[in-house]
Image 1 (cartoon, rainbow, N blue to C red):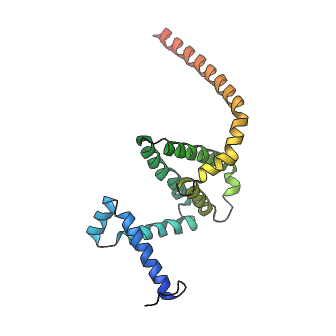
Image 2: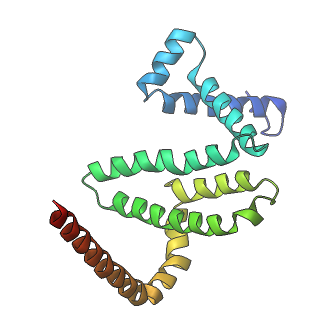
Image 3: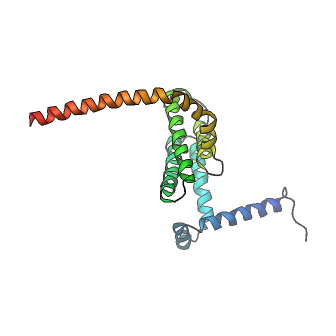
Length: 187
């Protein structure tokens, strides 16, 4: 028996079936996916691909692109951070602390340059791909961005940041002491 060329229709169809089977196996780990498939009769891999396709189109055409992109950058990483906190391993803790540090800086830059970035075609599509690069453990994008760019900057500015934080803390402590004293005095 000969195998179909990967570039023929049969080869593509075989590859699609293989990917669907692998996705179905991965989704079988989740009881809600199993339950959904049992109740509707629709294969869970079709539902996952359909939902992903709709989300992709909405981001591509900027229909709630900001909401979906921010959801992607917060929901999975927040859940993965929860799992990391609850696990005994410290390696996953480091990965998610690094992610949150990088995504915080990305969102600060985005906040101040939003008026320019909004006019960039397919901005939310590129941002979503970048967020996936940062968040997905197989890419380790946040680790790369942190070690190559952010760490160098933070190490250089660490003393200044700490000095400003201490100054702010002392002013805040002084203000709360005065406020507390004034509140107890008026009683």
